[in-house]
Amino acid sequence: MLQGATELSLDAKGRLAVPTRYRDALLSGGRAVVLTAHPDSCLLLYPRVAWEPIGAKVQALSSFNEQARWWQRLLVGFAEELELDAQGRILVSPALRKFAGLKKDVMLVGQGSHFEIWDIAAWEERLARGLAQVGTDPPPGTENFSL
Image 1: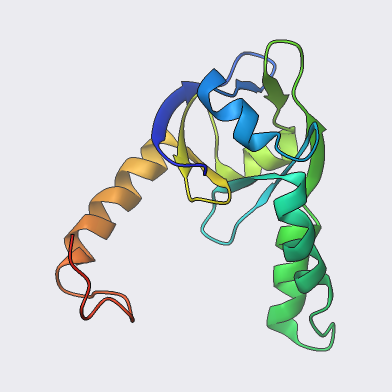
Image 2 (image 1 turned 120 degrees about the horizontal axis):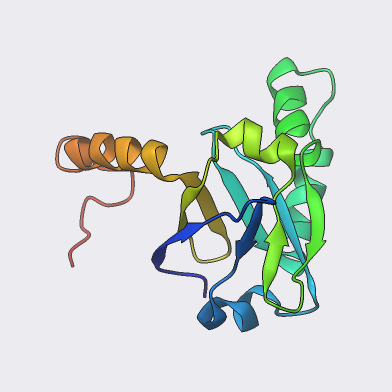
């Protein structure tokens, strides 16, 4: 399971070192990972085997629906299959760095099946906004949920 939140830095070439504790889970089923854009202006990092059914579902959406086309453009159009180098780094392309506004400091946030990668300033702003809504606008299905 890909979980936890870790602050990381991109190097001068745009490479991101995946923490050692996540590498085995991220590389489950092969050496490839998929990095793509998300409508929330962050990036998604999937093990390739976890991405394949998602990519197939997005590609199967109707190209006659404008909203579906935008999902395809973002999720499939920006998708890049990558391999970690010998130091456990991935190269985040200039196009994906620009899309997500990534500068130097980023946040890697586990989501179970994948990671989100956020520019640290954007993450802090979204986190503050999200925490302000947690008590007032719970998601559907959490009515009887307790921690």
